[in-house]
Length: 224
Ligand SMILES: [Zn+2]
Image 1 (cartoon, rainbow, N blue to C red):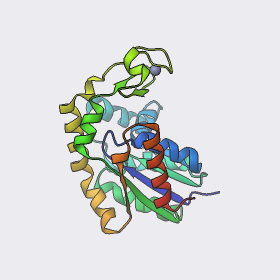
Image 2 (image 1 turned 120 degrees about the vertical axis):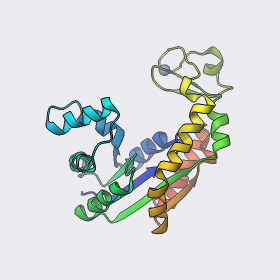
Image 3 (image 1 turned 90 degrees about the vertical axis):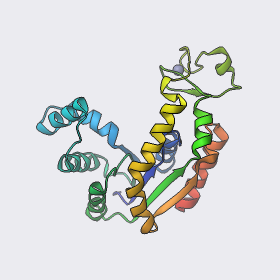
Image 4 (image 1 turned 45 degrees about the horizontal axis):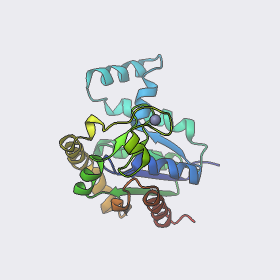
């Protein structure tokens, strides 16, 4: 089997992107590629590219497109035996869009789709600022659950808390930043008619809503 399907999963912080990626990977048997993870992983290696990546992570500088490209194609080559890939956090810029076109051409990808998880900002803020998170295993608990009241994680037993970066002003800023930064990329695929919009209003972290969103994605992708 060779790589035939590529899905870009886009969505602002709090849209449930990580959860939905994982469900799609499990359901479809695809590989998962996150640019953030790839950068962190690669920086541990011992070669010139890894060294440059480490410098950009430590120094907060932007990695030149040529390096991003090398990292991207190296990483994809390792998972190209899967029937498809879910891509998260890439492309970030118009300059990186060309790399995706190259990927599609190189592997003769048949199906390419962009899934955008829509989220209402006000609802997102309300939701995030009331949830509690386990700092140890990242499990999330909503008001009304027994863990929320006892403040003990039922997965790992750690004490759970409201995360400092779930503060409304921080979340609002991250949300706006995401929308602004990814707008050119989204607009590009929008103009090609390749964007599937998923109403993330359903994605309020309750199990039932997560399943609903997952099913909606599958339906709109045309997967049974
Ligand atoms: Zn935990």
